[in-house]
Length: 268
Image 1 (spheres, rainbow, N blue to C red):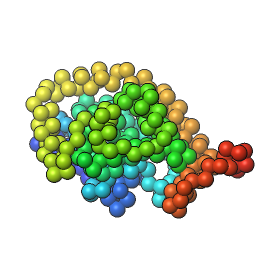
Image 2 (image 1 turned 90 degrees about the vertical axis):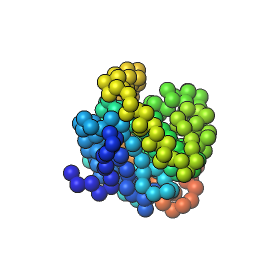
Image 3 (image 1 turned 135 degrees about the vertical axis):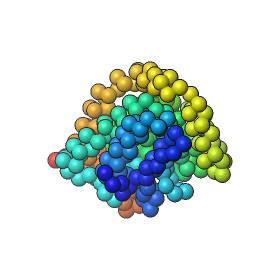
Image 4 (image 1 turned 60 degrees about the horizontal axis):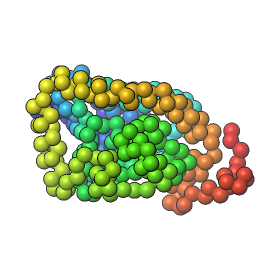
């Protein structure tokens, strides 16, 4: 397919996949996810590719999650997401090749779920990490809630997911959310260095290691599917996400008081 939202390039044993929506801080829409599926599957099938770099265009953000300018409104749109979400996760987890997430700037919400689905993460000092779910009436149910405890520990995961704070690159490194923090001018050279080090390793050995490392968390496919179904029902029929998205678009704090005092609108 012809890409509109994603850049795909190969050379020197590596594939580079770039979300190319810098005007939206690389927020993704349905087409973006479809193109990412195609790109990761293409890299998986290319025997000349030994490592994949996943990044975002521009200087301000890797990815800030889903584009609230184009939210899904119908169950049919959500069902389409249910097909593409698992497809993208499989394309990332099951391709047998290490994925390095290269982060500059914001890595928030669904962008941080991309981060935790990647095998390794290198960020410069401008990196900012976190989840947005409860802030906008939802939760990161596409691998975020499921994988976060395995990466940062149970208590820290609950802090990240409940409080929706933003964390600096150094804080992300301390909790194990990233592998390395470098100066902005050293980011690309460090990514190149890590790619070259990986490419000096056995492709079969890397594939076997990735399969084995994913074995325990492969059991989370069921909870992810359940979570996505709940998210679809919530976003289409739930009033709280409506308030969350409106407040974000209107640049104001969300008003959750009606939903706590029993006076909120009835779902449906």
